[in-house]
Image (cartoon, rainbow, N blue to C red):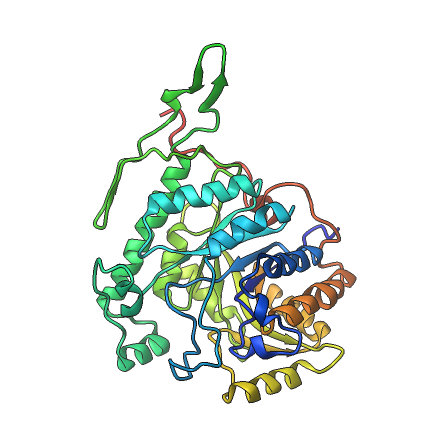
Length: 401
């Protein structure tokens, strides 16, 4: 086993990250909503000894942002990411499971109990990808408030400068409070609050349950949680970020942040921005993982040929917020090594076609990294926090108070 293995996870999104992935020869479009399909994906990821899988989710129907909204040649449906993770927990032994759960329209109490439960059912392998829901369409599903869509000019300015209108900043302020409340609720039971003494008829020690008494701009939560403190104490919190404001959000409450360096400039500029955003962070440093969309060479075609074929099926060239890699596993290993040398803590690969590229990651990329002595040859025992090199013992903020 490598003494300091490279950290590697994958982001699962239905048939894959290319909008035409469901039409690829080896994809399984009739099984996208079957438990066996998802079980096969995570089995492949665990065979590849990967650290974790994230499971994408959204409160809006998936669509190609560069294609017509009413296109019928896209997968316009998805399953709930947390429920997928719950189904996969007993089917895996070592792989981290990190579902996406929105912080905008979901009560923090529900988020806290759901993810703590996942940590129990996975025996300490749960995480949370925090997402902000910022569209009028998503808000309309709930009818509690109106959220305006960004105008074309606002969207262009956000992409170019990272500057957002006030209502977007407020959404991230709210999400910051949600993460804080969830973390407090995870601590609201001390580790030894459960007595379970039949003879004395005492199940819990009430002195070791704590009110969180959070009161902020957006909500008030008293607590304590109804779920005891889970195996990790604090499941791993992650976020995807593209700009300074979102780096600040991640620095305020996440354990690791997924970023999107370009191939032209590499991760150095983003690492500098993240460091500045996290300058006042206390405790463990924020881990930074680079996202890449990958189309790897297979026995049947090169990655570039596969991407070109998918673009032809889609009728448009594939674009992404993350850099797109096409090529061999050895070339991808070279890139990962290069970016690691620049300070990246790990990587999250987005398979262009879930079945094909995840298999290539596990069967080609991982052996290439192992051959260089850069990746584990077996899983260590322990939690997701331990696998990622995070402290495995997290002090409870309320203990001895």
